[in-house]
Length: 290
Ligand SMILES: Cc1cc2nc3c(=O)[nH]c(=O)nc-3n(C[C@H](O)[C@H](O)[C@H](O)COP(=O)(O)OP(=O)(O)OC[C@H]3O[C@@H](n4cnc5c(N)ncnc54)[C@H](O)[C@@H]3O)c2cc1C
Image 1 (cartoon, rainbow, N blue to C red):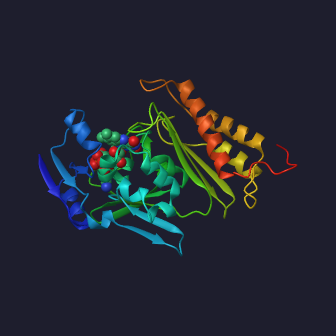
Image 2 (cartoon, helix red, strand yellow):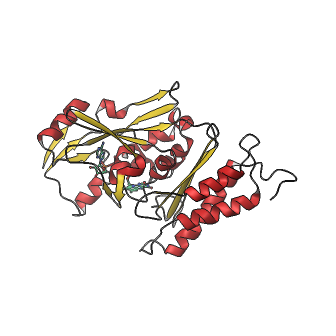
Image 3 (cartoon, rainbow, N blue to C red):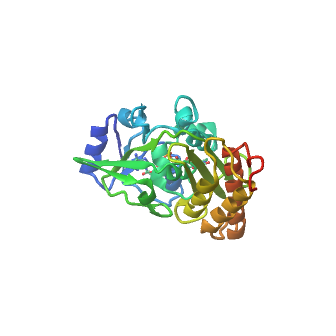
């Protein structure tokens, strides 16, 4: 196997232009498992986890955005200063594997694998992230919702690299929660991210492990946004119930070796209710219609 260790973005893109069939390697926490298990083959590899442009991140306060390079690790995302800018992504990062895995695993690798169980992905979906791609001489931006086309399938073309993602820095509650068979080192049976954007009076809700790709729950989002008092931080408690039911209805879970569809749908209902109640902790206003 030939291995190119790129140190700059130019080097990585040139290596991929010369050999578009090459496999991109970042932290290797997904790829090496697949190669070692014989589920995937790679004649040549371009390692990108030392590419300085991909290891960097940038907060643009004027635009209200955060750009995260593809090779930023979950350890970095779990800590300040990134954690304060995207709290839900930091929460998701803290649930990924073990400290050793988080030190190597990158956000770009999570996006590249495009598993419906990827912990960073419901957050990117809820935040309407933009995925930035580059090949030699060309770049394109893909809305996160269009990046994955199925389980572990994406729009990424041979020779193309994920350079990073951009997310908005929102004002409002953000939370990520997952259900699994144990508390640590676990692949999500169901996962969810809720993000409130006080400026646009919106509630965003995305779900993992309950469909072929990460799903949003637009009806549930509309129910919450219509009933919430964004200034007072209140929401009628009956709306929390309806929100959970609508989120569960939007899930498209299947039975597999990890769980049943019925359990996953139920888990989404519970996660949705829990996250919405955390987002509006003041509960229903006194004398309200709850
Ligand atoms: C023990 C263990 C526990 C784990 N626990 C979790 C968990 O709790 N939650 C979770 O979400 N994941 C978990 N994972 C999976 C894995 O750690 C994550 O998906 C991680 O984010 C992958 O990142 P990576 O840098 O290691 O990617 P790699 O393995 O290097 O690459 C993954 C895929 O993305 C492609 N790729 C990587 N970077 C780029 C790029 N810049 N451009 C284009 N393609 C790219 C690769 O070609 C490959 O197909 C676990 C893995 C292990 C081994």
